[in-house]
Image (cartoon, rainbow, N blue to C red; front, side):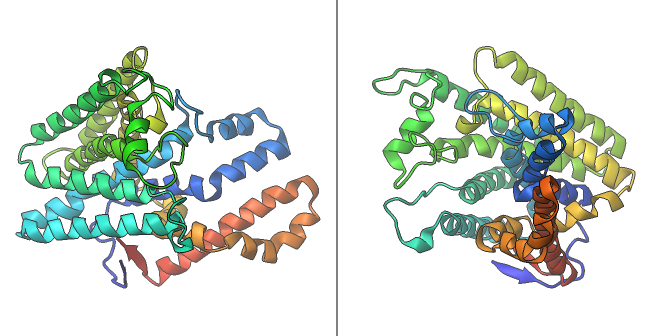
Length: 372
């Protein structure tokens, strides 16, 4: 892990990806709380409807809030062709690129341990699976596949193989004492594998949404992102055609997911194949939309707020866990919020978001970017 202070840091980056990544991170760093408080204050159906969607589905089903994590992984996949294939094309040895992705894997797993409370040294009750660890493993495996597959069509076969194989495992391999295809927290094979091999505490009690088998499925959606990245890098395809290809691919995946969910439920916590089809489909469409607006039409000023967050996404994810931004915002604006009655909680969230963003803006202006 290191910080960089280079003026050309973003010279080869897609502006739209930084905006979309920042938009994604905005919701988990306070955006959801803002809409929840606006719903309480205004009692408007509009804010209530949005706030209701900013919660995870208890088990089967899909809400926009379930998209936050897989969208981030999809975006990580989009970056693979820019970060790795571009260097491979310039003659950088594969061994060097392997070291790079291995280093990233190790650092993300370690940071995931730290995020989950490793420094408390309560190893027996610690949760070892983590969001950062799953990102690390999925990015690692997806990168190895992309670096060693020569044909674009072969990547599609890899994705199809992962999604189909994952579905077969979940639906047809029996869990001892329960049976096959029992898609409940206690019966799904993901939980059985986690209970057998994961030490410490499982997030879901009988399973972990970032558990061992989920890494396989997460690799699939990361590879979907890599497909999008390869399409975006192609110089022989017109920009508008790229948008159409991405959007149509997303729509096709969504339709397939809608068809299959009648037999194979959409479950984010078990990363079912149908969930990947939903999440991957929406991610393709969002990448197409943001690319059209920010990189084709060049409308970018509206996205600066999100870009500041997006270029330092790992920093903010760790930052809101480690730094007490809420104490700072309360110190500066808590007194005023107490005198504003029912609007006080809304101001408190706005102040919190402002403090977080100003911290990120300081890093952005100083060109300090946490590279993992």
